[in-house]
Image 1: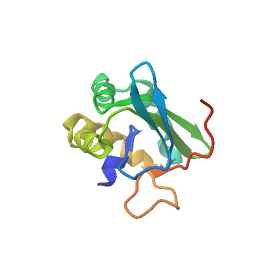
Image 2: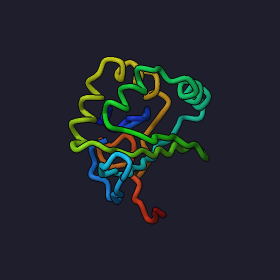
Image 3: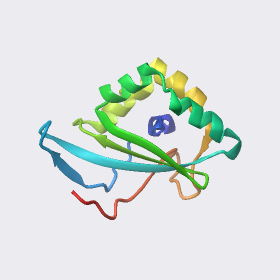
Length: 139
């Protein structure tokens, strides 16, 4: 189940912990958008490998993310930490994350990215990417 959180894809990725992030109205698509942010550590000796993977992600990985109703997805790095931000536009986050996690392409991708990462100390039991609390948003 922790693999579901790894959407980093991490996709990172990534997932199924009810975030306290707020919602905004997306008038272009007329869908509710849930903003989600996560943090995870990157192993120093794996940072270059992780960056190379994400410099040229597989097109199938990007397609799976979009199919899971994920848009505007970014991963940032600083001081040994990866921060991810995404917007979810679907209606069943847990089902979309499970569908993504069950995909063989996602599983192959995670076999490459997961060894580069480790949860932060404050992660909950079984949590890979740890939720971040949104404390401010400018619309």
